[in-house]
Length: 229
Image (cartoon, rainbow, N blue to C red; front, side, top):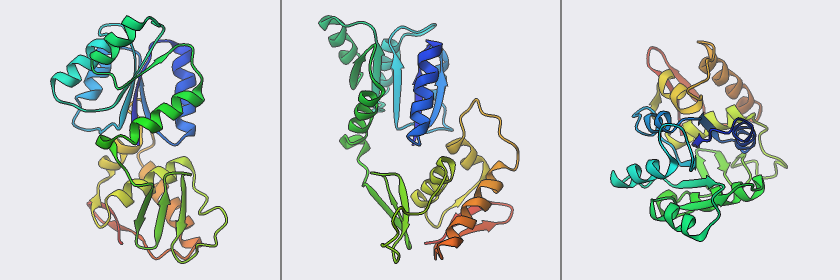
């Protein structure tokens, strides 16, 4: 799941980025409101939620929310701000923010608020995703095999392997190109090696093979990759 983080405070931004990645989110972090708007309107990415600071260079978080709602964009927005007056909270929520978190805050609370936003009707998602014999459990970020339910901890995957498998499982029997995978799983600021997708898929295949998984990732030469159910 991809998140847009819009925070111009360097230390806070780094801390949020680190914590979000630990929770297996893919995060694009920007520090300018106008740049954030360019990300939000890009046809190449699909965010599940935006975490937006109120006070930003170029374009405020308040204005970002207003623009989103004026375009009937229902992307959940969690607004961060040091403004703690009741009238400020009302203004933030009326602008289109879905939730409001006052600085300073604890990371545990922020993660809980994110989970609550993702459970709302516009973002309803089953806690279990199954394709063939593969079972992905969002509640604890684990992957298991249907005929091996006695697996104590599931298949041990890295964060990037988990994200890659999740993307394939969300699009079973569909060909996903290298560019689609790159746009979905790597941040815009990242500059991965040209063979990073192929390398990650090789690692993922190897781990699935160790557990005798029947659902294989097939290479469609000249086009991309496909997870067969």
